[in-house]
Image: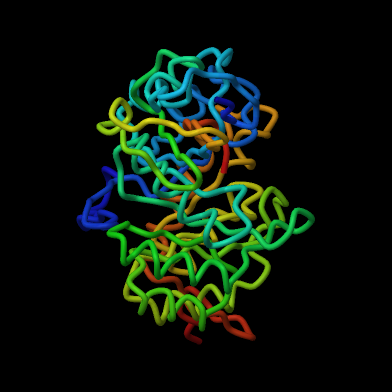
Length: 259
Length: 66
């Protein structure tokens, strides 16, 4: 980055500015120590956490790790199946964590973990009305993304593939359609398997990537976190640089020889 | 009176406050939120909010996930 004149490139999200475009999840890490190292290597400035019943014998807290690192805590509503559950969970998170940000996640069923668009939209409307900065996790659906933006969401977070699947971005065309139409940031959420997936998300024009399993379940989470950090930066830089068009035939990179 | 905290039945004296009920579970005050019968009780109201028989109390905190 020191060799070229990079434009000022910050992520504006929910009225705040961030340098990192990699948002980390915390699910799947074998221990808090492993998570801590991965977060450091990722360079993330925002990390999402779930809300669950307090375990009186639990030792250590993910909150302690995030606070020590100065990482913004983004509560999510993982585990909710209805708008009502998600709204209550968001309100509890606001109370517990003193933030009005929420990653809205309303799941349709346990087998696919795909987001339920009807419940998600219902919850989004209620949370926006209640003053939340709402970041909804959705399918790769351009129409739903537009409706959620119109409803006042601060970003849209389409999936690349089902949660934890590592299948990458199954429908890049739809992600591009969402990016083209969106006035709010588009955050590619779920499905990332390896660094090239994260780079592709950014090359397609996403403003950020959210991932968890790809790092936390990697054989070396700290190393994969470093790879994801580099991939997001590379993909973003390539997007800003403007790639060459794909062509059916060759185009010589040097002039043809004369005579 | 009998109330339910995080799914477990607990016998507490009549008039027990939300704050007293939370302290049967944890000494933490930050990073914790409480709902009684599906409604959030803000921390500033814990001590002044009495519980009633058969109330359902949920005490939540942030954990790894999502």
